[in-house]
Length: 118
Image (cartoon, rainbow, N blue to C red; front, side):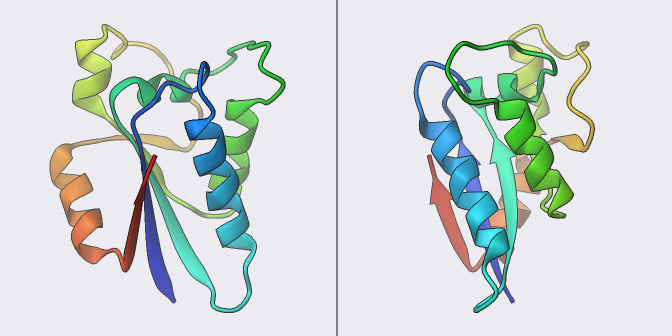
C-alpha cells in the first residue's frame, strides 16, 4: 500500500485549495486498486480548519470533510507552532485532529511514497 501525504497551507475558506485537497484525500481512500494510506498535514492558515463549528457560506463544510477523512482512518495533523503564532493554541479542535511538530511532518515526508502540496 502506498502512502500519500497531502500538505495544505491555505485557509479553509476564501480559496478552494483545502476543499480540493480534502476531495482528493477522500477519493484516494475510496480507491481499491491500488489502495493508498492518506495522511493530511495542515500548515500556516490551513490550521484554522481544525477549529470546530465554523459556519461558512461557501457551500461546503470543511469540518464535515475532515470528519469523513478521519472516519476513513487517515491521520490529520496540524502545526502547533502555527496555532501558537496565531493565538489559537488554547482553542478546542475537531475530534481526531492532532497537534504536531515540524519534526513529525519531516518524518511523514521521508516515509511517504508521494507528497502533494496545496
